[in-house]
Image (cartoon, rainbow, N blue to C red; front, side, top):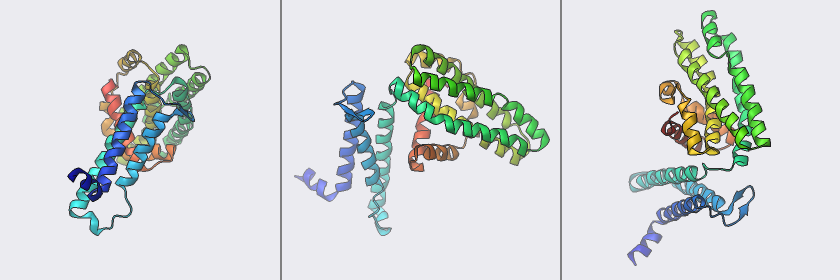
Length: 281
């Protein structure tokens, strides 16, 4: 009876627990190939998990809590709810990672306008720096336009024909471009003038964010062996450029791309970064 009483005394806690359970069960079912039917371009299981996570976010951000209620026990409860939301989001990100080739291809192509816009900004940035800094910056980013155009072309080819051959080409190109970007970040960090350095790093990072998003999507359509092969070709690791990456800027770009809250984008950026490093990139 005490357990039942607790449900009424702590409704938000109880609801959050149920929603986490729903997201977790949906993740397990999805991993086992249980779909319960289609829901648009996804499945009923993935839809249920996504809804559970979204509702958990609403509970964790309950606007009805007054400022006075945020102190003491209520503040601790809100903190726990935020942590639970993070857990559910990470669960959801884990089981939605293995998307189909067509779904991954569509998402990859959707990222290409952001990539091309970021590369265009890099082209303009070179002219805004001091002559000596501009020369170093231009040398560091010289291959961005060609690499971007080739990646966009291959992404569209993969969307039109998500075969093993087109996937292999996409895998090679996204890693190649990612390595160019990582190398450029290290070179830009050597610019002596602090203002020029920050301007250079910011523009390159926008490209890095888009490339990393595409890399993660390519990985989601790749086998473990293929991902290991991709990581083996990545000689400039994320850990090396991590000090020059601003996660806030990355989250802002992701939030704009998906039209979602920055808080959620921060979680996604952190999760992708963690996954990339674990994979060997």
